[in-house]
Image 1 (cartoon, rainbow, N blue to C red):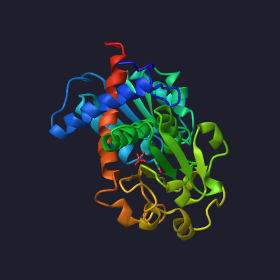
Image 2 (image 1 turned 45 degrees about the horizontal axis):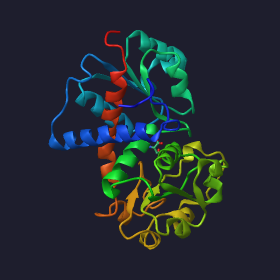
Image 3 (image 1 turned 180 degrees about the horizontal axis):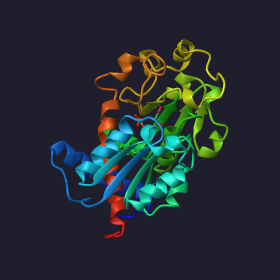
Image 4 (image 1 turned 90 degrees about the vertical axis):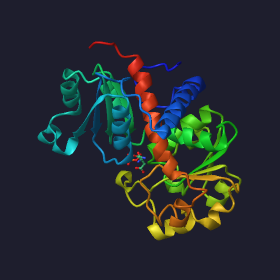
Length: 311
Ligand code: ASP
Ligand code: CP
């Protein structure tokens, strides 16, 4: 297994064999999970702490499930009831957890770079579960695994990532992963939600939704992340849906066998129509969640292999 680091902080910097190995291992966990079998002793005696400074449903739960399926002791720290509220800093919180000999620290934080900073201060392997607008690496892995299961490959596929690109760490991680693996990535959205550094990312930019979706193999929709917006970048939800919401009419220009993805949480009727989100053959949103558990098992497995046995 070629994975190059003690931590998983970002997709940027990983090379095709690292990504392919992680996806292959995740695929084997996906099959194991479907068979109902588990591998309960791989992380026996290891402690995994989930430290989420931002809300989460899918990521936190699937890291918990992944850790438990591999036999780790899993602790979910509730930041809202922790001593962070009494003024304790991120670094002091982390050193406290470090003193409890935590092996794997999963962190989500509103500040880009917070997981990287922690990784320099603690002994544990640190996993970025989403930092500000920077990256959400396990989301990109689960998205890639889902695409690969449907299309058999990543290379040469046209992937349209649509909506609020500027504020999306999901978009950033996906762009790094998919371009590294040879996909042709398009970003599609209003000019106010396209990042200034888009050209540097190796993607094609579209501000017209149908032009961006034409002939796409994969259509990935993103939520308007209003919690990160400064000022009104979008006129109204209704107008946004009219121009950039995915409905049957706009999807008709993509390939007839294209798949529709969304990392969740969805805002139905804003970036995606319910009929498309729930489409029985085109939508793979439920499978993305399932692959999330498998990918997180693979990441925990790979990082645990590099940890010293007795700490
Ligand atoms: N759940 C994803 C994230 O935390 C996407 C989103 O919130 O819209 O980045
Ligand atoms: N996709 C994703 O990260 O979902 P949560 O915010 O619910 O974890």
